[in-house]
Length: 393
View: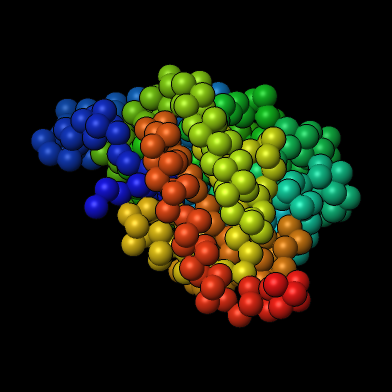
């Protein structure tokens, strides 16, 4: 069976060029970057070259990049490290209601240690209003964290506007850019952010590789205590092969950004338009204008996302429902609830995410297979039966 993979928000394939860059450090070049001998110096040089490439992707300086093992770790590092680093000034944090669980749970952990937090609401498109962030600030606020783009509904947030609000009050601002970095142009200086998280598995890099940008001068305490690695801010022997792969993926993303966006955005728009045309009672979630170029998300009324995923998988089509970290929890999406969708509609969440290798034929395969699946599931749905009765059908 031909497989059609449309779940790249969960993972992208490893580019051959990335694998080849990693290969030597998985075999003969096994030195520890902290060693003083030739093998150690070779490993250190590779790590620092990758740091330069990751920095260039987001317009940062290499000295402002800290490698981590995942986007979730980078978010934990940012939220906990920045908040505790400023706690002499205050112990209040502001985040949006649609943040990734790695941010929300980090905030909950800080609340258990005496911090307080405010969740800022979003509109129907999942957009955070900078004025709402400003209204949530208090004299004790030391950190604001609002994502660059939401991985579940694709909406790109007004990060620069929120950063300007924070900068005017001398409050640190972190943005979770895991879904955005490598998929759309980003420049930390133009955005005005103090910290930014990214992850390699979103742009053809290896899983388990990520980084946190921290603006020079921003005080952050370590999340992982240990040795002198990462300027003393993240202990533990460096994952040299993974870091090299992340750097190569970042360099490719920077060079190919415009071409990648041009390849996926029209397919995304066609997919959303055709889903609305071919299947009744489908709602596009997230903004149609301020949206990740490779991201299409909908709610299909009267059916559950899990059932649709299973039937699609039987047809060889991979998609997702809810965020990659919570799709197996069978809980209603906190993102969709925060956007004002009720539980019944939110249960029908589906996400299709593309890469530049995605073809029009892949979209055709989905559009041919999906409407009969929805029709079959609705025929078994008590909600749909009740809806038809109310209509007198």
